[in-house]
Amino acid sequence: MVPSRTIVLKRVYDEPAPSDGIRVLVDRLWPRGLTKQHALVDAWLRDLAPSNELRKWFHAHPEQWREFRQRYLTELRTPLATGALQKLYDMLERNGKVSLLFASKRTDQNNATVLKEIVEGTKKPPKGTGEGARAQVRKRARR
Image (cartoon, rainbow, N blue to C red; front, side, top):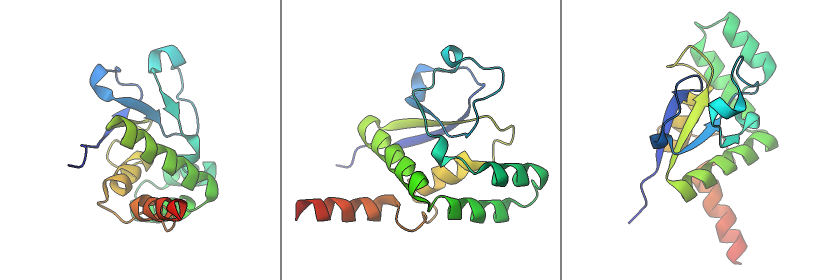
C-alpha cells in the first residue's frame, strides 16, 4: 500500500496549525512583517521560487497566468531548482503532509499552485524532475 501524501497550500500569514504537517516556505523573499517565530516555517526552499525578474513581471501582468506558468516551469529546470524540488519530494515522502507557504494575496494563481500540480502529478513536471527522475536515480544507485 502506498502511503498517503498530501500537499496543502496556505498563505504564510495565516495562523499555523498542527494539521499543517511540514511547513515549507516557497517564496524567494521572507514575508514582510512576519517573524520567524510566528511563521513556524520548518524549511525555506527559496530555490523553488520564481526568479526576481519573473516575480516582478507577473506582479505587473497578473492576467498573463499561462505565460507566467510556462516561464516558471522553465526556471524549475535549473540545477538549483531541481535540487530544491527533490528536497520537497523527500520531505513529502518522509512526512506524508507538506504545507506550501506563500505570501501572495493571489491564492489561486501563484508559484505554490504550480508546485502542487507538479508534485501531485496533475501537471507534467519539468524535464529531469519528478517521480520518473527519482526512479531513475534509485535504479542507477542499485547497479
